[in-house]
Figure 1 (cartoon, each protein chain N blue to C red):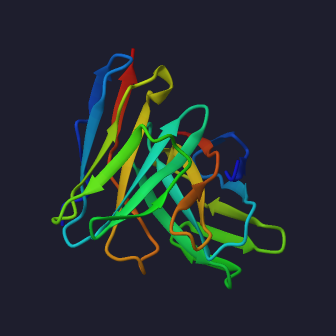
Figure 2 (figure 1 turned 90 degrees about the horizontal axis):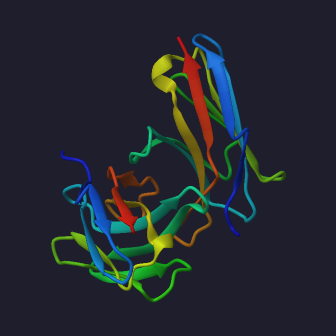
Length: 113
Length: 110
């Protein structure tokens, strides 16, 4: 099976712009979670989607949003980008809510100038 | 912050030596997991230990869990240069989100 894929892998944006990141989970996996990784704050949970519904949300401002499609692919959107949004954004999938292990993609590295 | 703490922050050893990293967390948990990350890439799941388990082995990995102290340790035996990576513990407190530790950067010299 192919692993979790994320596109794009690298992205450069300027302050005030918006960005959309995409994640394709492992085939058959229905849950997708997003994490932000920065040197200062480490790895932080953003949100989880299951069957197109957001189940859980981390402590991030409303500028961060996401969605999941019927094929389980997920997108996250960040509007009005700030310099502090520069980070590695990681997506993880799991087959079901009962599965404890999450499988991570390679991440999208976002640089905000 | 809910984030767990790991120590040491960085560890340098020679190939063949053992590496031990420790993780402390703050809340009651269902399980604790260890992940490896190579140089800013995605995380790879290594091992999961449930709250009712005290020790678990997988190949060269040994994980212990002490729920009374809210701590865990990861031991990598007979380390190899390919083990060079950052290692993170992550706790699942039954809210379906993983709370990650701060990570330990392991450097294994050939």
